Length: 63
Image (tube, rainbow, N blue to C red):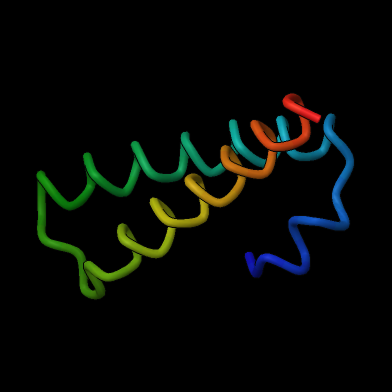
């Protein structure tokens, strides 16, 4: 997800997406451990999306 898309989400949607992407990240890591993924850069992309979502959620809580 892009930064612009994340800013348009509500707090509830951010929390839901964060949980969804954390689960996806864990699944990708396990799948990559068992058999190497065809595109291991997916893990990095999902990890960075999780970080973006968490950062935006923290920023909104601090305001």
